[in-house]
Amino acid sequence: MSVCHGHLILFDSKCILVNFCDTIRRLIHSFERAQSMRIHTLDLDFLNTPNTIASYLIVGSGGPVLVETGPGSTIETMKTRLSEHGVSPSDIKYVLVSHIHLDHAGAAGWWAQQGAQIFVHHVGAPHLIDPAKLLASAGRIYGNLMDPLWGKMLPAPEDRVTPVFDGDTITVAGLSFTAIDTPGHAYHHHVFQLENVAFTGDAAGIHIPGPSFVDLPAPPPEFNLELWQQSVERLCELDVDSIYPTHFGRVGDWRGHLETFSKLLDSSSAFVRVRLESGLERAEIVEAYLAWHRERMDSAQIGDTLMKRYEVSNPLYMSVDGIIRYWRKRLPGSQPGSTGA
Image 1 (spheres, helix red, strand yellow):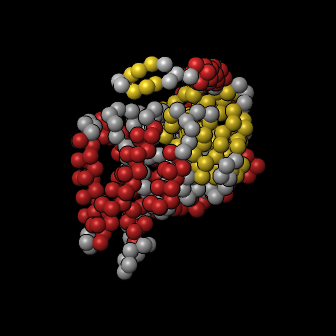
Image 2: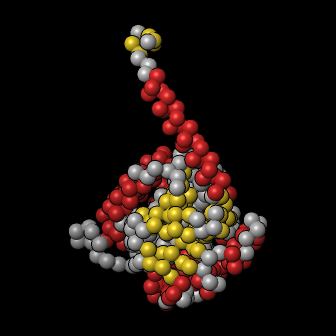
Image 3: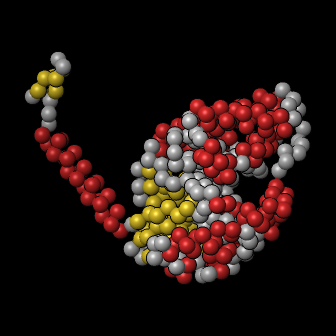
């Protein structure tokens, strides 16, 4: 028995022993897991800009696994990054992609043609096998910048593509990933949980190493505020120690990150809605959104170099276009029109 600050405290030695033993077991399990699994963040140096697009090399007891391929324009950089860890492309037998946007899965077909098995959301799978519609859609946005930005997107042989569904367990190379359906950024989006970490693609937004700051990637055509908030709620229920967004790298304070991101989803959507309802044209909304974003960055003490990295990772006009498209489908009397997408 002990007294602390006037309160009677009873110490149950049996309870303390159980808690102590449980802590020791968790520490031992974490140590054993660390010995059997290594995660390497591969900087694909997109557009010669560091810390913008990551691929994750996870080395398990049965060999290496790749999460996210990056675009076709970064294949040579990928080869270099792999070689820094003693891995060659022929060693990669399994590749997981969060969704089929070009910055995440643009090189998936190349990897499939090298013999890797690609695991992708079942809705996105057909578009890796035949990327014609995906490329046509992207071409309307990027025009003659398609090739310098994204390089070639090759078709994946059908037998090299495994469609993945919510809750599926992908057991490869001595590792077990769980697919978690997380629409909002795109309908066909998965987060992959591996033990005590989660690879979040774009579902948890963007954070580039530096001062605390979270950004929203909301390109057309599939941005959905309600679905994304539901996905964030689902992520908050995970039992993990850290998350790994594709843009960019490990986030330790992931709960704080998600709380901030959830608020940003609401505030960004509201910002665009108010201006759309007031009758502003797209160009005016983009200009206002850029100014608001710059104020947020200045408040977070984001310098010019880091600001450029965020812009390369997530061109802001695309988020405006995605949010405008979302509201035009929902606001009474709103007329569908060009969003530049």
